[in-house]
Image (cartoon, rainbow, N blue to C red; front, side, top):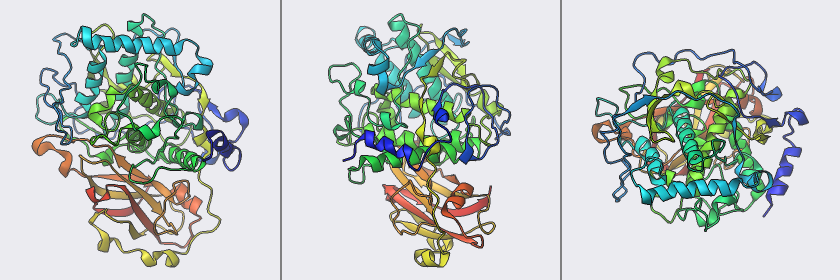
Amino acid sequence: MASLQSSLMLLSTNHKPPSTTARRFRVSCSSGGGGGVDRRDLLLGLGGLYGATAANLNARADPIQPPDMKVCGVPDVGGVPLDVNCCPPVSDAIKDYVLPPVGTLRVRPAAHSLHRHHHGYLAKYEEAVRRMRALDKSDPDDPRGFTQQANVHCAYCNNAYDQTGTSIPLSIHFSWLFFPWHRWYLYFYERILGKLIQDPTFALPFWNWDNPRGMHLPSIFDNEKSPLYNTNRNPLHRPPAVVDLQYTNDKPEPTDDERLVRSNLATMYNEMMRVRKPEDFMGQSYLAGDEVPPPAKAGTVERGSHTSIHRWVGDPSNPYHEDLGNFYSAGRDPAFYSHHSNVDRMWTIWRGLKTRVPKAINDPDYLNAAFLFYDENKELVRVRAGDALDNRKMGYEYEDVDVPWLYFRPPRRAAGVKIKDISKTAQRPEKVFPLTLSRIARVLVSKTAPGAADEDLVVEHIHASPEEFVKFDVYVNSEEDDPKDVDKAEYAGTFAKLPHRGGRGHHSHDKGKGSVRFTLKELYEDINIDGDDEEVVVTIVPRANGRHVTIGGVKIVKA
């Protein structure tokens, strides 16, 4: 089995950055916009205001507002026969939160480098979590306790709350609320830890799973005597096992670390760089009165690497993949907060990329979406999504580390394939859909224009069982009937979701459907598509529980 060190050699072969000085990116930025450079010549912005904004995505309703915490019910946990109660304490006093003045920024360190570069930090972190856990025994109703903090994620993510004044469940997954809600969640969790040890400079470590050096569970979480340890994890994935950002648990464990690292870097490039619109990355709109969003409305990172890490850590011997492998239990694992710190870092990196894609969503229904959290002083505060756009204004930044996936665009295919040669096993859409994805589907789809047109692929009317982990991959013009690798030019992207009960009663998203969009222009260039081709072969490969997924159709549209 290859080592991670040998895997790092990958970056010195086919995927060199434009210059040796551009390989590092300080992750801190202002509000979003875009530049205008070709992705092969990508440069990174290190601050300043962005020039472009997104058009209002939806102005037909009001923004999501905080729930009435006094009306908190039993969460929907996907058939789990357990008495799960995740309703936080209730307070009649609610304050509008004002971000405090920022002096010295807190620096969130990379978890894998703590022993080398941050002496004394681990002892401080462990003591903070130890004191947070101690609150569970000394005062179970203290909202700063470890269990109560885990309950926050369960309540918001598993529909314990309704939208205020309605019987429509409230959820913060699968929409544009995913990033700002989790940023606020980590913000207060971090400040509570700092308050417990009387250190306002304390910052959470991030699990750098997008970098080969961090592609394993950080060792700080693997000490059985530490308060950071959790027994509900996959025993096969203790360090130094390499993470799999395409993990499904329906296939044999990979044995080639170098192959796995390449797959991970290709996955990150696809999620971060092949994005056309802000909602493709952030997730689609979610407004007051809307039903719980279906998983297909999630952004690229949420439905990709974020979900894979959750599943990779969760214990498969547990029927519900607790703790990290299921929404309701995820916050019980201290590794969750470092995992999501890196997810938050992905948002910060993406907003700093000087690409043509607008990074800001100026829709007031997004900016004015609001949530409730308990702060480090046990006060219940109201916060807005629009106040969470700039991590520096929130008082923190990320340690400067390499971002190797920036230059991991798949190698261009030397020659294009002839459609007539690969379409023999493909069928017309009308003969395939609607489809239960219990087998691989190969579909011959018409383009809007010949050749490398500026187009998007839409996999539409997706319904995935809320009680199952599901995943499928999409390829364009693959010569293989059963493609397996994602570091290939023909790989378009992934859809994945954790078990998640989507709502209660007639409001359940069990009947909800959504569509996933994949950008094709760069992919067309990489597969060397023939200028006369008017059709492509789309291959949809079920990776996990395909029998629990139905797809209504596939089409190609103008970008």
